[in-house]
Length: 393
Image: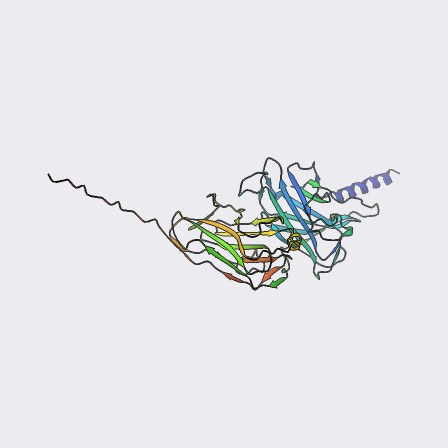
């Protein structure tokens, strides 16, 4: 009898260890607010959309490299899954696909999303600090067949506008600080160690593209300047049908030019350009940036998240400016501010990516670069001495 009781206790312990392996529970964080949207997607869709908005409502900074988001679902078949992220407010995104064990009626898999770096500052912080970021992610099957999300733990129905979702879990340094993990383990299930698949790249497959007759072009307010001057570069578009977002990568010489805001504050690695005439409406626009100032690289973008509302409005944005960047002149030289390709921009055209209001990346448009800039030192002024004339008496 004692042996049977001991075996029962050991089995119960093993099951609890399996459920909570690598998970440490803690009281919910009062500073990190997490909102969720899936763009209003129904349960039968060929995309598993998961958008997350993180807000710092506390009084101190949050290190995003310690944050992990888990979305739990039931895998319908053995078809390979692909993950892509369209918008990241800070840092570089990575994702892993993991087995959830013991399985439940609502979950046998979860995708864990992490950021490589970034600081989320308290609400009210001044630019270039950020108190809110949004991650827009999509999981698809390799053959683009549909998911059945009706039996997925983290799917709570169509959510077109951001709101709370208690069925996602957010961890900070391994401690659960928001949401819940699946429960309801059946007694017949056998506890086995969880298995993690290989990391999923971002994005693993090219985004579908459509040809466009539009043009992207970079203009400067001056091509001749002196040390200490400000040069304003503007990223423009024209003749597109309907733009809902963009990404761009600009290269400049950091020994000659320094990117600054219009009030003179220098950029940092997360600074985003000032907004142009487009993408200013009420469709949940989000900015992204991952700059390398020591190398003279600005990588940034802006996109509407509520594309359905934008498209339903029937008012397309197609011609105007996307971003405005000021550069302070540091020394005399001949230099350029150029749009260049980057490994971070998949399928870019001369350092640019343009998306229509269906979220589809456009192709075959023209890109026009800005002209060269000639910078000189301020001229040395020689004072003119006017001779004093003594009147002759």
